[in-house]
Image 1 (spheres, helix red, strand yellow):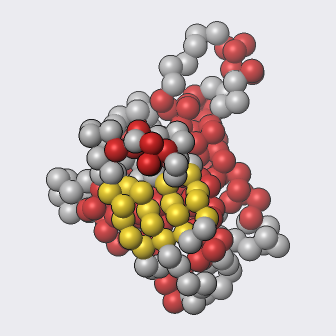
Image 2 (image 1 turned 90 degrees about the vertical axis):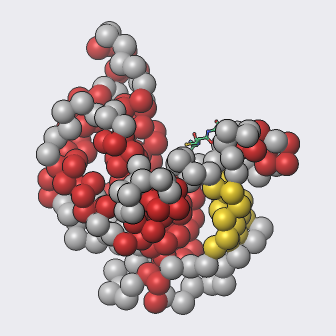
Image 3 (image 1 turned 120 degrees about the vertical axis):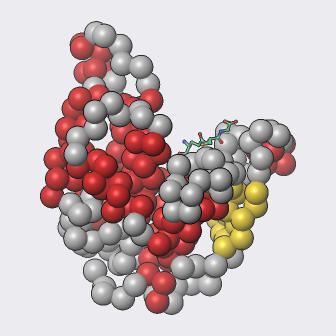
Length: 220
Ligand SMILES: N[C@@H](CCC(=O)N[C@@H](CS)C(=O)NCC(=O)O)C(=O)O
């Protein structure tokens, strides 16, 4: 990967609108935009008021959920897809490993793992039948936690020495899950990773916008 920082990299001209709501998963792309240093505008929605369910917004995201990102003619929804798009387009080789880089494999793996495996493992009730785990895409909670623990033990980031967009994606879920106590008795590597994430100025700027009532930089 190049040694320059993402913000220094002259990418294609951006015309980015992030459909955003406070106290929501909109934090993830907001944090990534702050890491990238590209200009963006926020289109604020109130989830309480139901702005996300209006026909107008459903033309952007038919799911009626935030976040959504529009960059000129490109519309992207689903947080891992938004992260992949932004990092390839504005941080390629810096916050996204290049296609020929061997780290591209683990990068894609953890991107998909974030919402397809980690998120259900921490938010869904686990049926008592262990046989059911074989037929479930996310398996079982203990294996998910152990798998993540093993990679974070080596750290400092998911791909080793290089912080990338997948730390924003999976890391934002980790921060929120730890704050909400969704991971009982987390292994020591989890809060240590979370502390490294929270120390990043871009995390703190995005957290101050997303959770304005929390002490500065405290995040969720
Ligand atoms: N799978 C989506 C999840 C998005 C999501 O669930 N957003 C929540 C806020 S955290 C939402 O918009 N909820 C409002 C609703 O469903 O009405 C992603 O990863 O981007």
